Length: 88
View 1: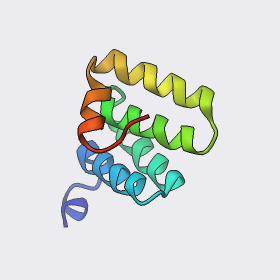
View 2: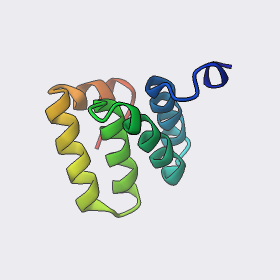
View 3: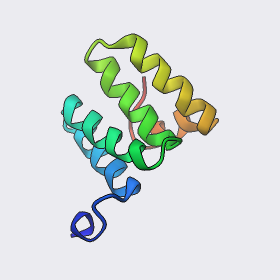
C-alpha cells in the first residue's frame, strides 16, 4: 500500500531492499537499493545494504566502495545495520 502511494520514496525502497537481503535475494536487494539511491544518494543504510548484497555475490571491490560511502554518510552505519541483524 505504501509503495503504491509513494512509489519513489527512498525509505520504502530501502526497506524493501532490507527485506530482500533477509530473504537472500541479493540481486533484488541491489535493485531496491539502487532505486533508493537514485533519489537519495547519501542513504547510508541503502549504501551499506547494497554493499552487503554485492559482497554476497562476490563483487568485493564494489562492496568495499559502498561500505566506505555508507560510513562517510553515517559514521555508525555498521552499528545501525548490526541492530537490524546484519553483520559483515
